[in-house]
Image (cartoon, rainbow, N blue to C red):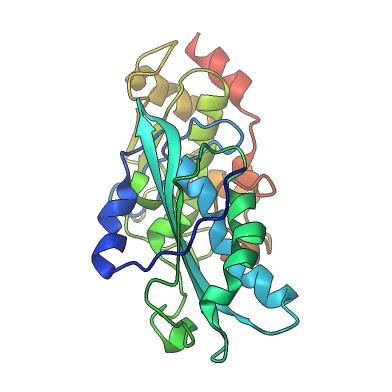
Length: 297
């Protein structure tokens, strides 16, 4: 196991968003839906079925965990993580850099928590991912982080749309998930597109897949259903697959709500850990692989 990296000071330019685009995507996934085209969805990494850097960003759940379990009250509930992953031929080959910003008590020196964060947060997030001794760990590049939450800069919900979805790997439709009931296709359409794309990849029809759903207010059926397998489709062309999707899945708002059983109090859990890649949510189920295969044959 590589030794713990030394925390590195990081000027703002070093931590810009461009750094974290890496070289895009071993997998994609997302979909929002409203009057504008819904954002896409897809996957191809084993176990997670989502982009590798996003899988590592389960780091974003750690502030809550530490807040709950930290008897010394050193951590606050706010925090964020960014990960740079190097890719070759659309596959992750090395985790190059991890930036972790965490809220802490005023009397705490963030550098004193390096060992704890490395052992309890970073190493667990790196399981199954390629990394070596050159991995760079950067803690609180902005210095002390005492004031957090809505009083600082997170806004009312504290959520970034890209973080709730698939990071920089996929364009978003612009509609937020949180705070909306399942009749709002910004939310339920995104969940269904995730389900569709995941079933396509899990069935072996394609190695990568992006599903885009486009809806208009007052119209139940989507105006457009687009599937992009990025040349990895094995059994039929993408336009044929888009037709099969509409046969295998009910993409109307009522159909989505029924299929995914969305009229239940399940949404509080999306506040910690994100919306995708967690098997306890109904849009992660893989129950249409057989029907998809039968439809395209």
